[in-house]
Length: 109
Image (cartoon, rainbow, N blue to C red; front, side):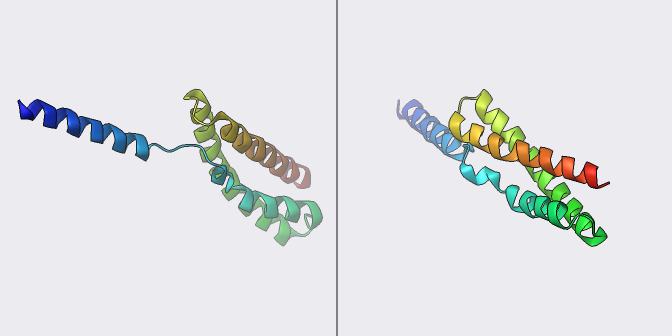
């Protein structure tokens, strides 16, 4: 009789471990702004120089790739209703930053 009790105890521990391992939304998911902000500043203030344009483009591309990953994660968090305010904050920070970098790149082209 102790085998089923041990098995159910083990299943309970496995569920707790899986719950703890699930990723939750956090404000640290806005890390791509570290790349997008310098890209925006370079394109805004020094965009007429070719070195600044290409440096801003590289930073913007890397930041956009990171933002795409984090935006996808934030939408997933919203779908699963895990910390929706933080997920909205991530979307509020990243979507406008990606759009502004894209606009700056296109208008400087």
